Length: 209
Image 1 (cartoon, rainbow, N blue to C red):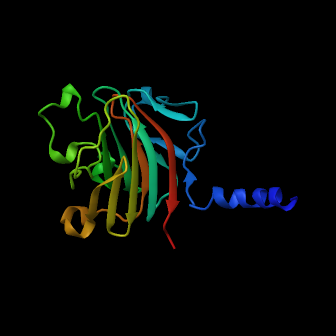
Image 2 (spheres, rainbow, N blue to C red):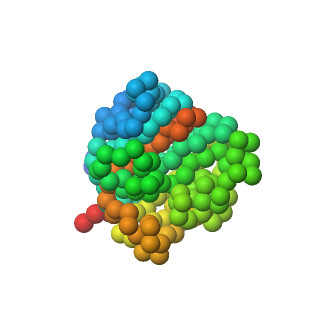
Image 3 (cartoon, helix red, strand yellow):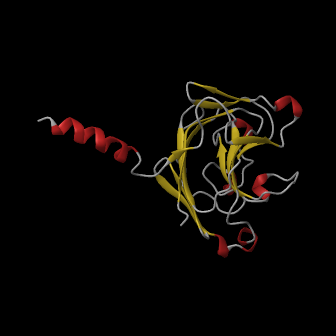
């Protein structure tokens, strides 16, 4: 009878870390991240409230200080009406005025139903798409003001996106000449594209050996 509580106490930490996902934010500030390519007036556009990262309308992006190669990235995001943002992957450590999507990769975040975009979007510009390179295979966007979830896996040449529980992108970088030029290791980033965006539960599991 006395052993059961002890066994539960010992097992709890093992269960808590069994999947090896670690949070990329501490829930209170941008420790481990840095603001990039933002206008001087937009340096304070990222704040936290109740553990949620809130980006008010501004410019630039925030990137991890650490570089990652092979990983699984999970996060939830929410945008307002006509909201626009993105998740940057494997952005190289170079000084450039180009968007990170032109240097590494981007998984699009967008209010797909926003009137500002009606009739204007290419198929690879909808949320869940590997921006420029591969359109999402189905529409699973929940709507402006609703939380959506991504599980993004980068493993060597393979990039997959699971969007609200549905696999919508399965790309081999070697199948596209331009995509194949992009690095296999770099920073992870979150974009401020002038409309506001929120993120929560941003966690990562390394697949590197």
